[in-house]
Image 1 (cartoon, rainbow, N blue to C red):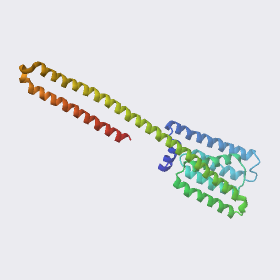
Image 2: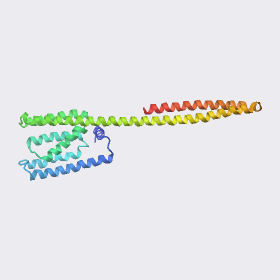
Image 3: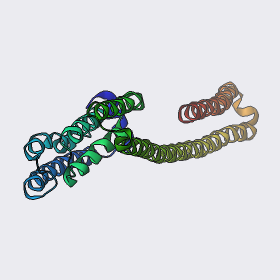
Image 4: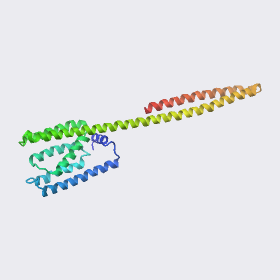
Length: 258
C-alpha cells in the first residue's frame, strides 16, 4: 500500500488494530475467490452470457479478482474496474450478478479510501473513458448516460457521507484527548498543591521551633544565635525556593499538555 493510500485508509478505518486490518484483507481475498467461482458458474450455467461466455470467462475474473486488492490499491482497483467494466459492457454486454457485485466493491474502495487528490483525477478520467468507449462502439448517449451519471453521483455521495462520518469521529477523538490532558494537568496541580502545603508546613514548624528555642535559652546561649539565625534564613529560603520550583513545574506541565 502506498503512503498516501495507507494514511487515508488508516483514517477511514479509524486506525483499526493491525490484526483486524489483516483479517479484513483476508476477507476481501475470500470474497474475490467466491465471486470469481460464482462468475464462472453463472456464466456457463446461466443464460445471461450467451454468445459471450468465453470472453466473460477470461475477462470477468479481472474484475472479481481485483476485490482482493481494493484496500491496498484503492485508486488503481477502482479505476481498473471502471475502465475494464466499460470495455466488457461495450463489446460483450451481459447482466452477470457476480460482476456487478465485484464492480461495486472495487468502486467503493475508490470512493472511500482513495486520497482526495487522486480521486479528483481518477474519477473524471474514468467517466471520460466510459463515455469515449460507449461513443466509439456506436452507443447512443441515452443508452449510457444514465448509468454514468448515476454511478458518478453515487461515488460522490458515498465519499461525502463517509467523509463526514470520519470527520465527526476525529473530532470526538480530539475532544477525548483534550479531556484526558486536562485531567492530567488537574491531577498534577493537585499533587503539587499537596506537596507544597506539606513542605511549607514542615519548614514553618522548623522556623517556629528555632524561635522558641531562642526565647527559652535567652542570654545563656548567645553563642548559638548566629547559627540559629542562619538556620532561620535557610529555612525561609527553602520555602520560597520550593514555591518557585513548583510554580515552574506547573507552568511547564500546562504548556506541554494544553
